[in-house]
Image (cartoon, rainbow, N blue to C red; front, side, top):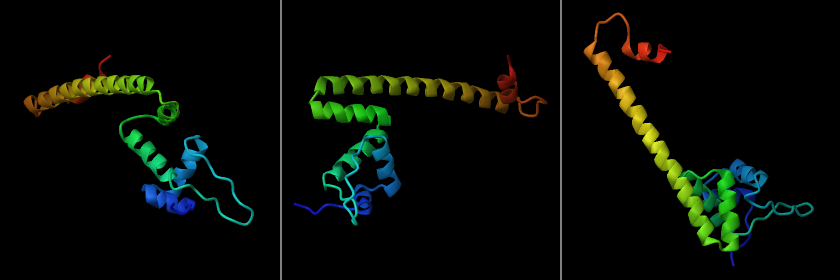
Length: 132
């Protein structure tokens, strides 16, 4: 069995900084071990995987609240509910992609208007943004 880790060792092993560990503790995603009298808190080696899980979930777009729910669902072995949460997140991502595509089309059209009307007194981008 691996020895327990200091907060610095945990942070380094998980690829985060110490303040990230402390923040996860404040948010309730990571338990803060008791501090022994005249000693340092020690973290179980398994906490490295928990911090990495949190970071991977964040990279997929899950909020810290959602990650807390995922961790609770994992403990409850509730795969169906976990799938439902992931499907909701996927739907939100797909909506954001559609919104971004619409923004791209709108901005592309405005840029093309600038190219066509080069030398005009009024800028088509500014005109479009200023319309009521």
